Image (tube, rainbow, N blue to C red; front, top):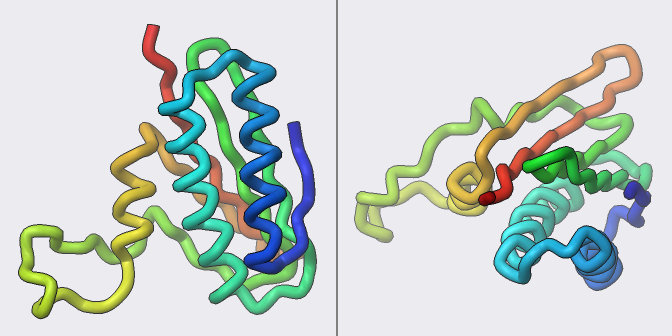
Length: 135
């Protein structure tokens, strides 16, 4: 399944509905639906806030054998490789931590694989998240 969403936080309700449709049609459990909602919300929100594009953001959801793939594709934006984002020291006291990065930390903890691709010619950013399904 794939769909483009307006670059706006108001799109989140439509995104959650899209994810629910995907999880229900693939008979995936509610725990996985919660995980997908959380990681997509975090990444979509970051794209809206920090990527200075004006195009819609495409979200693709796919079940392949024993895994689920989630892709977020953002057009005409600068590169930001989330796989190389600075790690958050969660052992540090809150007062000592730098601001930001906790959402990406959670995404990395909740997903099994994360890939990032960037095409310079058309300034397209693609994040692929993979979650292995338990047997």
